Image 1 (cartoon, helix red, strand yellow):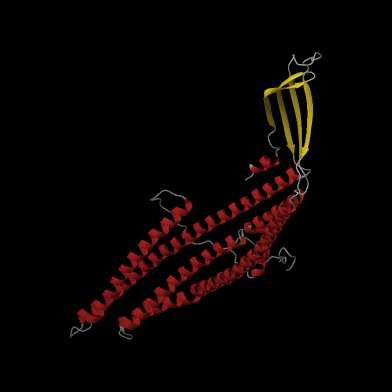
Image 2: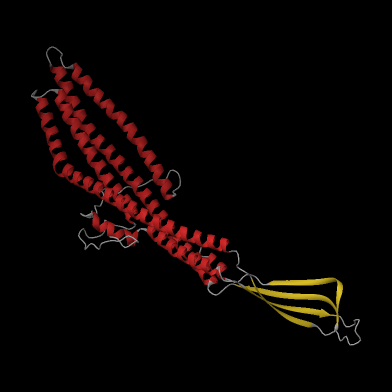
Length: 387
């Protein structure tokens, strides 16, 4: 796109023409056999510069859209990575709790074998069913992990079968407490808006160029007339003749010119409306994603600080209580499933928070988690000046 700028700013190629007369034109100096002409078209003042401006701003818009595409790729990498992170942690949680479940099965088996009337077999079988269900979950998680690896490899353009080493933990970044800061950052960071601003400049240059079309272009030329040495006139001297050519086109078809100007104006109005619509869309998306990020972040902290530790403590106490017959096996299994659900929910919410932040950064247009949580908010304005 940048390579178009020097093309449209350059003059048209000059025209070199030769005319050979089938029947020589007789002149007083002699017969005119050949005429050689060269001409150059010169656009009206400012047209070439405006054409260059149109191409330049179009190139800038394309560059901004390429930057927006890069942000999408970064987002895809992060989404796939954090999905893979969740699946790996989910497998580890199931493996860890599988060990606890095997301890429960051992307790249930011991109680069955030591029972006088051999009661409690159904409890042992139920525990084995729960263990078998964990195995099916392992199969599902492993296959989901392979799919996540494939998505990550695709986003990274990595070769098939490449292995990924995940970080042991997620480094938490700052989540801005207010969406106003993020909205203020949009105008300076979002490349989609940069592209539309460049297109607005392009359309303004196109309108100016359409106004220039009401003025004629100029053509300058030089002619060389080859004159023969013998002619009908006794005073023929065979001297060659030269002439200059000056011409202009006549922009008399006003309907065409008016339509071209209207087209340029309509395109500018469309681009301005697209800017406003994109601004509103991005602002609303930022606000919704910020609310999502705050929700995930708050729930992660509650799960980590309160729910998961208490669920783990409940399961530990339940195992001991079941060992001495103070609770039923079903109560123990319920507590086991509760801890499993809460731990998986913790890692799911953790990965969803990071995925939401990745989408939020793509929407804002720049990194946000490395910024201080509290910054002065500068009110952002739309192109029509409203805040």
